[in-house]
Length: 531
Image (cartoon, rainbow, N blue to C red; front, side, top):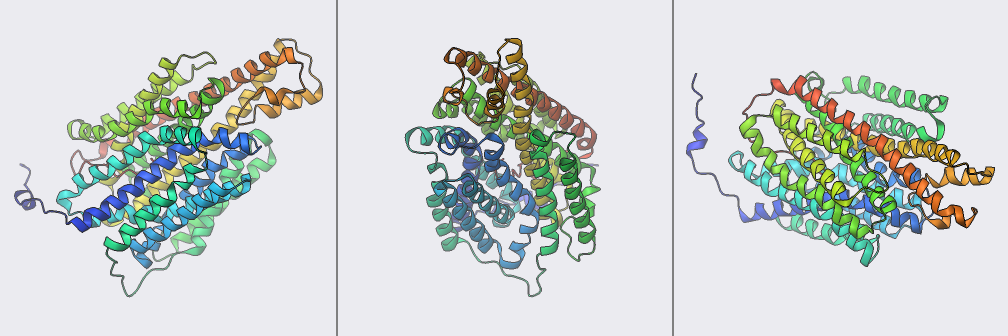
């Protein structure tokens, strides 16, 4: 049967008023800010560690605490816009984000820094849903693809300049300004929204936010992730580890039963019976793990092992971020030609190959090799994320798109969080074992105190000769190289896990995406903020 042409296709595309364009630009600045912050903060770990004496296991909560809170609250926070309107929720979330940025920038203890980042994550959770909902409500259906392309350009630019700008700020000013810069940009966005964004007409009878369900879901997720964070300290056989994981699972189970009794459910059961949605969401989860794994581990490797400055590290990261930002929209064009399954498969396979290349990094790896691998990582992720986001949109009914986007974003954020926690734990766990075996092979006789010093050093964010003052001076160069080799070994183990994650994403694509229709609506991606 020939395909019927929609009557709207014969009409000229409606123009978007200047007022609406200003609001869209304000949201674009917000997305730029989110992606800038997301890719920049990983470069602050080393300079923060130099100023505030703490180890990698604690400092990684600057990253994982932020995305964990975002993941835990993004679904219930989506209901806030129904209560107070999109404009007010956007502004409220942005004010929280700016407050967290200020606290983090001013912090002089790791506890204050982590608290600031948690507040940032809560703010991001609050404004995620209304930001994307605003785009779809401002633009008419005939122009949504074009408008989304414009907004995505802000995301790509944020990804591209984030590491480089962060390196420049760290080198020339201070790592604190990576957080301070959010405040003036946030003020600009709030001013534009106050002046040009219209208030929503709120229904007389409004559904309240389920505070009990929110607390159960957030507590279960946080408890489970905290337990995973302790793997390198407690070990896999620890009773405390499995007790906390079991406790987290129990809380999440209680949340599921509680949610089933609610009039307005946070997690509609139809979503989890939707094969295409689950394939896209789980695939996004595993590929988000690869994104954060490369972002964090390579930031540490380039600065600690290859001894590049933060600014030089930022320049190297352009290979990944600019290919990801540019090739993301190109991935949208691939969808029009090949459908969804093959771009997703291609993106996941390229990412797997690139992460496999990173698994062979050593203390003497060349810069061209590193840049080539990171460019391929960006290429694979850019194509995959674009196609995966479109897949999610195409299998979800329009009335469920907001809640589906929240669930989908939660999967992505949990992938980021677990990746950061496991990556930093594994690099310490496997790196420590490799270091002690290497020292034993060299026949170095260590006192119990020196042995403990080495165990502690591998868990530090930065490694320097000053940490080896209790060792004979002639041993220091050999020990530093052994520490670098141990970190490279731990990184290699992580990257092999990354290859496995990419292959799982391929399997999920072949399993669930083949049922998704080739054409339905716009082929422009809904890219969750921070990715």
